[in-house]
Image 1 (cartoon, rainbow, N blue to C red):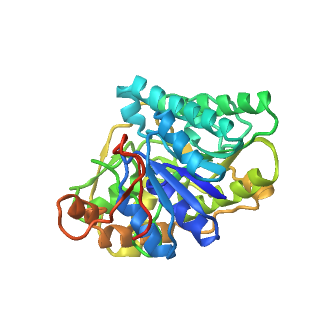
Image 2 (cartoon, rainbow, N blue to C red; image 1 turned 90 degrees about the vertical axis):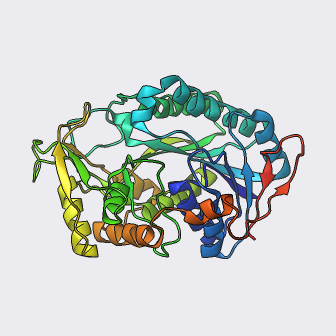
Length: 367
């Protein structure tokens, strides 16, 4: 039996694969590689010393996904796959709705076909919309303010309806706050395409000289220094939250939402200062106007996850900074080895073709 990880070559997915493998699980990874790199999975194997199957499959391709389930005994699914940029979702809403929602529909249909009814879903704190009350708890009203957030909210509602139709389903909806950090080996981390959407990789790319300076959106909020306050959570803590949720869904039925955050907020400039203190690097920045829809303070109430999952975030802001910088300084251009392989420099791993009728459908195992 194995855990299927959709979007497993991405930032949070790859870190979760490491923790799953280290905990003794067998995994099967599916990813279409549109916003991630195969190199991350090679490094997951390097960190863990374990082999696993990888399928280059898009969740919109139902027949390819059926083959994955047919060839593996899947016991549960951790579902990360989906587009994830707020700004891009505003520009391309139909693309987001089709990819994120339809992809999840296809996944659930195939799961149902094979009797797999345990799923941990990667949701987001964006489902809370513009809340003025902090800390944010799971029972607050939900109202997303952008297409990305609405896809997460719609999928949550879809999964709730699925459970109402069949009480054998067991579903955990994990609402992330602001992931940061990297694996302490420096081998895997956040490697965004283009200018980063998240604050920490923006800071590290400025430190590495890839970007000239950090743009800080607004300094007139009612916060300690006028800049926005957010709940930053180490990606390894976040990955371990998925293992705790997996244990819960494997043992029970039902559908529950959980905040994964630290319960502590840091301002943009507090994070910058912490990074400078930990690394000794100076981060130049400029203040620009607020972004539409941003609020001053947002941080989680994570007590439900502690109470019901036995999970708490353990890593602090200093570890987030030091681990992020170790990843960035060791990999100044992200997964550069992947680019070398694509250019024909060095030896690439050889995929084993499973279906000659679909050249994008293959398994990559370890070496």
